[in-house]
Image 1 (tube, rainbow, N blue to C red):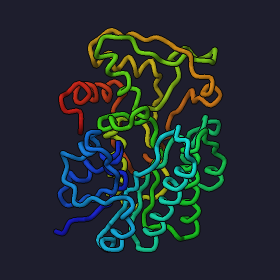
Image 2: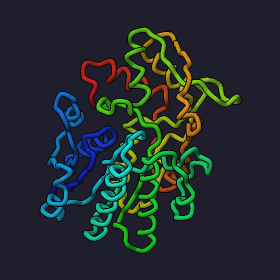
Image 3: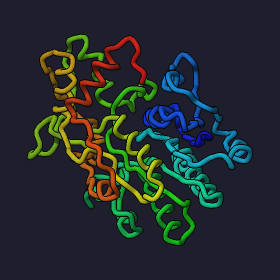
Image 4: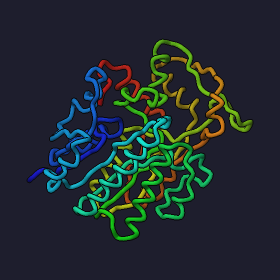
Length: 333
């Protein structure tokens, strides 16, 4: 049986490398990765070191690669993006998160290839319209993201839905609104790492961790909530969509259960078998007016589409990450 070729953009990154690992575990699938690796000392290449990769493509060579190998590609899983919510260069964000995504979407539509891509829960802004992954133009157009990253993702979601409504979409297209993902292979992300990774060195050293104070009287310090999902679970949803070509649309990827930052920190301390020590610090004034106090994915649409696997609880997922990776000699999946 011939191999099925899948191209993963951003495949050496955080979530992308988990998707690559999940798909490459099936020896009938050949995984090609389009990404930038940077300095070897930064270790991004290690995100893929344990998995067979059929080909590597530099982003500026993607057009040429598709011209030569595109006939063999069954699907493109587009995880590549400027993912920093604090990126100051809006033109760079638009070029990567919208125009590149549009061009790949259109190529897949022309060539009859399937297309799965990373959207983001950042598209929901402060959540004033809820966290329903409605896949229609009116609902998507009503969202008000808080930063250029979320705005760029929201604009591409709208583009995809409009093209699909016009009958000009790939044979399968699916956008994944990832909520707060944590897990191995995020070391290269710097300040954009999950809170688990950020506080681990302090917890391991026996220190107290700092969380932001709450500026809402009804919410306790540390009571701000997010939908935290393990990276392996997030990647499994993408893998399931690849294996379920009849499903298209935009879907939330979270657990459906919001937990507090205090809960998250407590799970890290518990995994390290240390007493919980949390200090609360002032939030920068620039963040206070645009800070999300609550996110929770509505998961009914993904479940209705046929995804049945359960997600790791916060305590289980954090314990697996801490004990299996962060505290291990080899922290890579």
